[in-house]
Image (tube, rainbow, N blue to C red):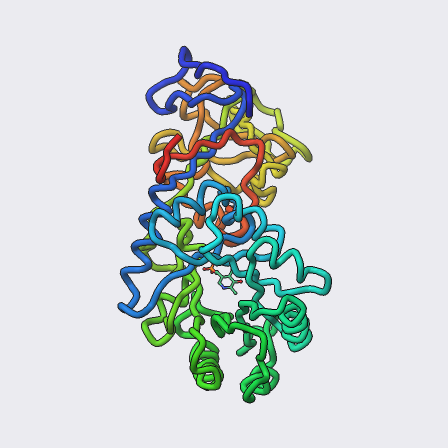
Length: 387
Ligand SMILES: *Cc1c(COP(=O)(O)O)cnc(C)c1O
């Protein structure tokens, strides 16, 4: 994003604020680092004095940019991070001192032993072969290597089978490893009424007793809201840090972290019997004003919002009409005749949360965030070293 254009202001109205620098045709994604820091602190306030909070920043901090989000979380007090794979660990090492550990949830695959050590990444060991592999690396290195054990208590996704985990509790069986923690992951934490939560909790309590020297961790964002019994030594929120509601159907206790303003590229006044977009799926009922906005499915704006989604102009809701295409979508702005090309509309913001967009699209907020497009002009606000 090397080019710097002056914001255009001439045609903007009060309802559509002037855009910050960026190409005039770009929609604008604003990431509020101060909100992410406030969310981290708010989650910590729910924990007891002996419980700390790591942060899960896989998928480039849920699409928001790990190189900016991670330093903000460090400034908010976070001292351990989880990512999905070694590449992500390597990517955040540039912004993280080596004394702050980065744990890799995907485990330790054959051939990664040297790179894990080079990038000061700590593997979350998910099966016995990974345990053996890391022990061999420790022997070759001549010193103990740090590790986390992940035990599968009911998710059937990653982690050691409980019996395999218990076999590792035998004296000397983990020689060469510095066991930092034992963790497990909840399958249904966002649903407090789901009996699997209590079953996983009971299984995890049994397992962690076999490793009394290691710290224990079970809760993701939603797990934090299941109560203190689920907190153990540290919790592992991701989504809630970024404003996704950890308690679907109830009031969101966290701050929204993103705002997306769609840039209007062109406006058409059309009369029946005209149709709009691919497949001619929307036919105008009367004289209509149609705004074409720079956000499409290649920007992560879901095609399932075709003829279903919304945007806001101030407090006015306007509908998505026709199909969302690769780079563009169309809105019926008949009720907002003052808009002009270059103005912006709210796609995510005070009237439309990430969760609202996800509901309309038939998905979850996690998917909306992690697909936020790379073609948007990205602006970071707040944070430790606001630029
Ligand atoms: C992604 C993930 C988390 C964070 O989950 P959120 O629901 O985003 O808080 C925690 N633990 C594990 C093992 C994960 O894969």
